Image (cartoon, rainbow, N blue to C red; front, side, top):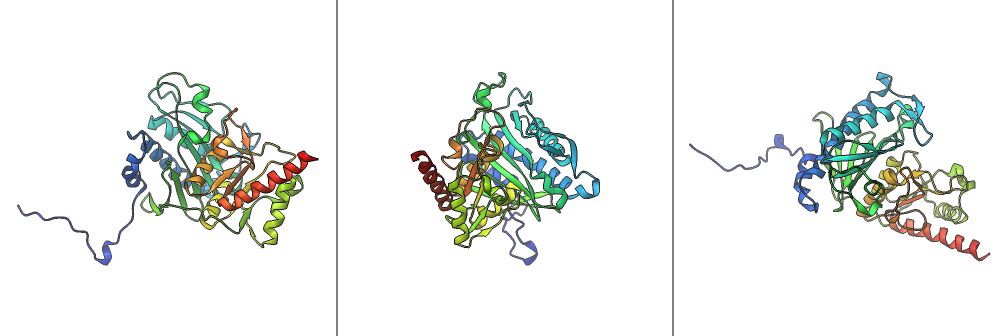
Length: 346
């Protein structure tokens, strides 16, 4: 029997398709200190649910699944039909995977015990961020955080399993549903992005080793509430305008963050006199994006301290968020602190 060694073809018809998400996860699995396959399975489960949500999002207008669901979530926000669909899909995928013991979701007021006795992980997730933009065909996203549970496997879920600071995350990521669908994640060893190829049904590595520019000329903030901003923030926004920075605000957190991560900029959702604790949720929005930002060389604070150091005290705790290029975040934070000190002195 004749044999020969495999040699990759250099023919023009044998072009490389690229590295799939599954293959990349397998290659990088050993970088994870608890590598035994569970974390890899969770990422695959999330990717599968993301494909389903991507399909539902793309046909929302045809299938009459856009618009309001007719109920409000724990935040007092009106649920959209796709909020409910996404919540079901991600929770179901994580349940069937068997590696997750509990889920914290924006759409549920309580922790969801998945009754997976051997589950080692807890997932905090915003299944569909910015869903009110679906009806006007604007990019939306999914945000997720993954933690190792703190109590023994098989025991009942305890508060210490859930109320962990962001620095305890073992992985975090987001999915952006837009002109193309992307999944971006980190396990603490850099940030990598994958673009969905619908004809093959696979995510392919498209943005390896994503790095945030140290500086930028984009600021993203809802200036419609500027009369409620702290004095220091008002001064920082004035500075951005004096420098002729570009104001870019989509109103979809994942989309705004993703653009600034690639191009350089700062996203701000501040505390205001009306919402002194901010409006973004710490556990399943701010923590995940802060972890990604730091791994990409960026920075994330609440205006006065590192987001990942905040110890949660409630399930749906809110926080201000200043995130993006580190030089811009530091400068904005300095303005806030400087004007706060002036107030204290008076």
